[in-house]
Image (cartoon, rainbow over all chains, first blue to last red; front, side, top):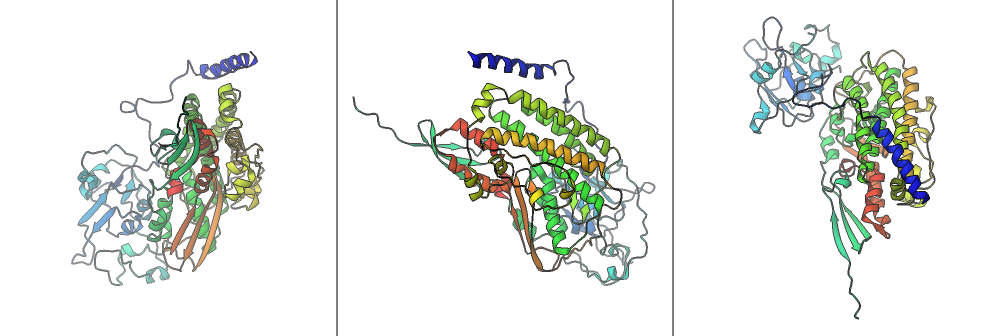
Amino acid sequence: MLSIVKGIVELVRGMTITGKHLGKHAVTLQYPEEKWPMPERSRGIVVLLSDKETGALNCTACMLCMRACPTAAITIDAPRGEDKKRQLKVFQLDVGICCFCGLCEEACNFSAIKLATKYEFSTENKEDLVWDMHKLQEVGRDVPYEARPKKKPAPKPESQSQPPQTVNPVAAPESESSEDEKKEGEA
Amino acid sequence: MSAVRTEEFMVNMGPHHPSTHGVCRLLLTMDGEKVIKIEPYIGYLHRSIEKICENRTYHQCIPILDRFEYVTAMSCNYVFSLAAEKLAQIEVPERAEYLRVIMLELNRIASHLIFFGTTAMDLGALTPFLYALREREYIMDLFEMTCGQRLTYNYIRIGGVSRDIPAEFVPKCREAIKIIDQKVDEYMALLNGNPIWQKRTIGVGYLSPELAVAYGVSGPILRASGVDFDIRRDDPYSIYDRFDFEIPVRPNGDVFDRYMLRLDEIKQSVRIISQALDGLPEGEIKAKVPLKFKPPAGEVYSRIENSRGEMGVYILSDGTEKPVRVKTRGGSYNHLQVLPEFATDILIADLVAIFASFDIIMPEVDR
């Protein structure tokens, strides 16, 4: 008998707590129709950023993002042109193996790659998950960003002495100090 | 009348059983309704994280280790960074230490909220699950505004943290922990006195302190068995020795105590976070660590108190960019080992309660 009374008391107590939610608004959203605003730092799809005036890619093909990537999702092919500068030929991102860690964005010195707040890029074919530079650029056209100063202050002398890494599929460059190798020393 | 012949039979529980929390497979030998033998089969979630880390630089290991224990990914970030910092003897800035403690404790609360919700759901109460995940959302929002992700944070780095907190973080965090602190009382009122809840938890799944120590059980399960051991206090790391908090200990070692102890821990974590927010200093958030981080040759083991117990990382370095060996230790592995000891006249329903109270997470077991 006592346990029945106790049970009823606890039932009322529990129902009171759940009953408090009765008149309240739902905390969930009907997703495809309504969406939460994404925070500014949200790490969504990887995009390539373009110059705001000329519309050209900011990427200088320095390959720092490729080296920073823990899952090797980024493939860059940029042979050196006649003026010894790298020409970006292939920039490929395999969204299927990208882990959205953001290390490529942190490695980039030229505001060229960013994890935008966009999501919703599902597809039915596995092949469509490999994005080339044109698609990455198109998706990143309207992504706001702050352009970092292009010229870095004079690098420290010891940072020049680092040899280029071997993961670079392109022929390893000689010791000419093009703009893109200056970052190596500093995180 | 001839005697009825009886025989044992096997029941396969999992790997996709809803109450095995992931992909744990338990092979049960049954005698009627009683479980007389439990054999856990593991390996369904093996991703060879340790081996992957051997082929990555130290910085790249951190997003990989996010997947090691994804319910508290901050602690995975932290324990690896701690080991690397010990190896290279890096001094971490004051502000970074405070931010790390705030994030670790927020993540502990988030993990315990998941525990609370899933345990109640396994035992037949659906409402707490919805409530717990609603409150967890506050913490997920805080993480998302700070580091951009809700689950795999990649936030705590070698030498500090990746980004400073945004301006609205501190007021929002205070509000969140205040709400959670109140809600924990509500959770207790919702379940503790309920006769069904009491019958299913009190006195079920007793784990003796001797057995717990013998199996290397750690964390809330160990403390619910009456062993007063917490790495945050007994082998302090980071700046935990500066905060005033208690280590809850409970004597009975049953499912109810393991559940209550985690709710008590949420309250203590709220205390730590509010103290850390009060004392948050200005300054640098990251020590200078080169992109080509090369720690000196040697070996190091670092351990922290995770929401599931002792989490550790062992690194063997040969002085190059990549570790030679990374060994991870997760509390759940030991907790799964002790599960067969419970196969003494329990029902499958009790096994579900015991398994839920252990808060085992399979990525930590399989790695």
